[in-house]
Length: 195
Image 1: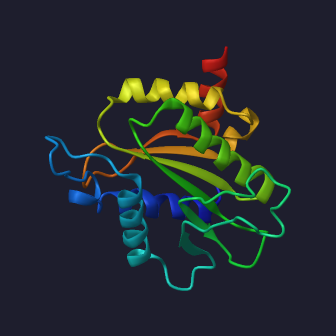
Image 2: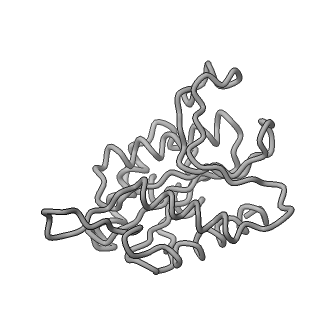
Image 3: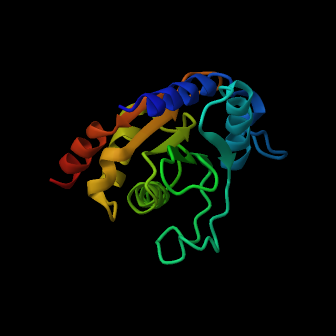
């Protein structure tokens, strides 16, 4: 793996251990159990990443960059995309590092497929080195989540692009995210789920 990609993955995984409390699961008046809110969690991941972001690194971290109307993306499938996090060189189309989508671990399978397709499109069409799907929450146990992710990878529009994808999972507050699938392993699991 590229050293910059590995550096970012390490930062992201280490950062998840700093996310907990109401940023991980939000109590709701009138409900017995707190709920998983992607935007609340994603904003805290962004905040925690920014607090440890390396000075003078050639990449910049941005959250929820609206790509609608971007002149170079107009004819691409990502023309209307708003990724949760971008690790890029603003103003340049070449050499961008990572795009991150965040989902609650109990999100419907169709949403996992949609986010994986979006990540793959950023890698294939816009030249990002890697796409990361960051799942959070413990509503589902690991074996079930593994199977759901493998099936989602198999249903992608661009299954050949799974080699650029990594799926991480933070199962509980203040825990380091675990790698469910990474690059070549994601390709292997997608092939197995299809076959």
